[in-house]
Every structure is written in C-alpha cells, then in structure tokens.
Length: 420
Picture 1 (cartoon, one colour):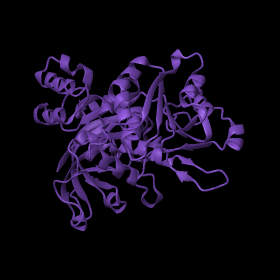
Picture 2 (picture 1 turned 90 degrees about the horizontal axis):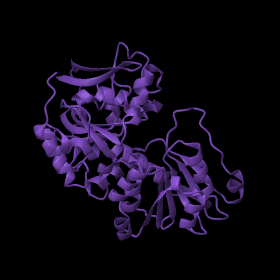
Picture 3 (picture 1 turned 90 degrees about the vertical axis):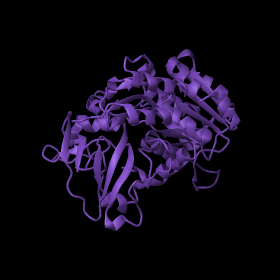
Picture 4 (picture 1 turned 180 degrees about the horizontal axis):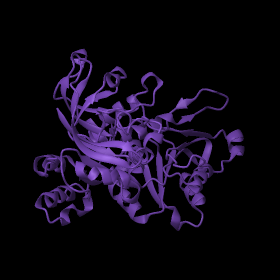
C-alpha cells in the first residue's frame, strides 16, 4: 500500500513523499489518517531533528513521519488484535506510549506512523500500551484535538490541595472554589475554560486574563459568561494590560480567600509571578505552558509556601485516561474543541505550517491529509475566489465562525485531492 506523508530527515528537513508501506505483520494494524492537528511540539522536533529527545539519531537514512494529534479509520487488523479492533472503526492515539520506559512516540520516532500521512502502520507497542483509542463521535477534527484536550484534563487532575494538619493530597481543583487562567484567551486556555465549565468538576469562579483585547473578545464570544452561569460558574474576562495593578484587580474578584487554583498558559516570568501573588491559602499553581529555554525561571514566594501551604505543579501532557475522558466528553457533546482551530490546510500545506508555526498567528492548524490546498484562516474562507472554500466559510458563519462537522464533511467530499 502506498502512503503520502511528511517525513523528517534532519534539522528543518521535512519532505512530502509518496512511498510504499511495508507489508503489515499479524501484530500490526493498517490505518487511514483523516486529520492531524499541528502542535508546537512538531515545530520543535522539526527544528531540532535528531537532537530532539524523541527523534532517532538515524533519521537521515530512516526518516520518521511527523505529527501526533491525529484521527482516522482502522483499515486492516492483524490477527493478534482481531478481537479488540475492527476495520472501519474510528480512532485516535495517545502518543505518549511510555513503552518499556522509552520516549518513543508516534509523530516523532517511528518510520511508518505519524499524523501527517495518508496511511500508516500502527506497531504492536501502541496496542500493547492500550494507546489505540476507539472514537465514537462524529467529527474527526474533534478526535484530533483529543490529545491537546487531554493535556488540559491532566492539568486539572494534577491539581492538589491538603487539609490543615493532614498530609493527604486531595487531587483535582477545588469544587466551587476560585480559579484563574492566566494568559488564557488562546486556544489551550479556551479549551481549559470549556472543560472547567462543562466537565465533571466545576469551580464557582473562573477569571481569565490576557493582554490582547481582540483575543479576549473572541474567547468571550465563544465561551460566554451567560453559558457559564447556566452551569453554576461565574466567568470573568480581564485585560491585565489595562490594569495599573493586575494582582489587586484579580484579588478583588476572588475576595478575601483569593484563588484556590491558578493555571499559567504562557511561559512568561511576570505572569508566573502574578499567579504566585494571587494564590490563597493552600492554593495550587499549575505551570501549564512549556518554555523553550531550559533555564527559564521566575520568583516564587517561599514565605507563602511555608506559612500559607501554597503548592506548585507542572504537567507536560495527559495520560491515556485523560485522553479517554476527552474523547468521551466530545462524543457526548459536552465539550467542543472547535474554538481551538483557526486554520485548515491540506497535506501540501503541512511542511510550511510545521516549520513556520511560530510565525503564524491564531490557534490550532488542522491538516486534512488527503487534500491539496494551502493553509487558510477560517475567517478568510468566505472571501475565497474558490466556491468550495466560500461554501466552507458559509458553514462556519452559521456556527459562530467555528470549524464544524458540516464543514468537515463538505471538505472531505469536495476539496481537491492530493494526487502526488
């Protein structure tokens, strides 16, 4: 079987190629990829090449397929897995396998599996680690976003608190408590708002801060104050760039108790220090954003660590249970990660998207792996000279400007296929 895929050969050396996949063995599964969401981790792996911890040293001669936020159909099941999986099943994958303690992961480390591909061979280690996850929902783009959503779910589960005089860690956010999401009007921050409002454990107050007013306006139009109130959550958006004393403004919203849970969505020292300053007694700060600098640091109030029992945690991805929870909530229609997506593109757009991701504004970039069209902002679809993309824009306009199931189905039926 032939596959077309974006393969990594070295630092910034990505090549879109069509090649023959090897014949699958009885303990492997053949799959067709429909969507892959581009992650900043893809960008880092592409720039670093074999210097990246997950990328093999021999990629120059044994290239790997890039992309780890993908979804599609199972097409052929080896005999070993015939009782667990079937052809035609929809799936997503948890890339953090943890197989025998290795960092190897689909999208970084394997020759025949990665998200920016038309067809792949799923190796037995994925199934052995229970990381091939059936998806019962409708839209493939949602399943592609299950991995980034699982990072948010994992962060919320990683929060912990204690009771005075007890050393037992009570895991999760404080139900009914005060929560702050700093630098939170971007795609991951909006996913966090969605999960906290719609998920199984809700705070009583969520304060979302940012310094970009258009980004705040977009978040507020999609994650509305009124909808949060229907779920018993008071949601407040705050532009800290307009506040002479941002910490005082945030504390005023939380009251005397201050904040129980604070999430930091930007690796910026002043933001980390703001988060520390608004923690209440027994509050937990989650440093969600991954810095690129290995020596990143910020000041932290250790007086409060000692006397106010404040905590600091960091999470770098979710586990398989977090991903299952994300897929289940999506399939049930309780959370909708569409607000994360700001651009769509075909497989021919994948290379430049990965390499130039840091230069492209907006949120998540979604690749449809069988198609040939450039990366396009969803906001620009309605202005396209091509009637196919204008129609996609109309579908999005009827869904608050968001990517949606109807648009995905129309794209799959009408967008130009890649024939390379």
